[in-house]
Length: 145
Image (cartoon, rainbow, N blue to C red; front, side):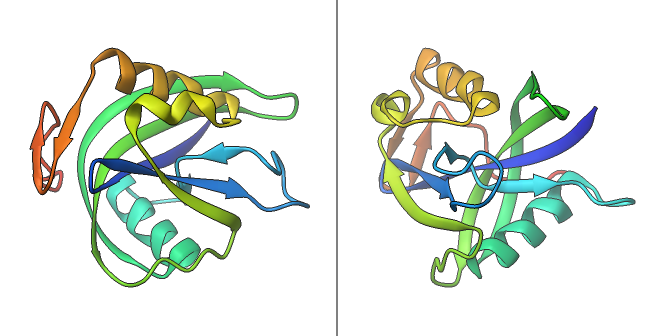
């Protein structure tokens, strides 16, 4: 099983989704950004690296939210979702053709990558509320030790 890390990034009561470019696996599907953990890499380092490579941003990784196991035709993955805070940089997509900031209640209306669907369901089920810069019902963004 391949471990993949995903970022749940909030801004103004919305969460970032990114659409995979055409020509890539799962082209046209929306996902929480992230990527595969490289050898000797921890989840925090992976997410910070991936978000910098994919969007040119700096970020701060917070608490783990949920894992989603999914078996695609060619690979089985464990998608580990973490809350992430945008620290600096302008979002410029590299591996995606579109990004969108989406309210939690509307996440399910996007054509989501199958492994991301359980993350959306849990976010909606737990009805996390984000108000301005204060996060209610969300884990803190204190980096993992």
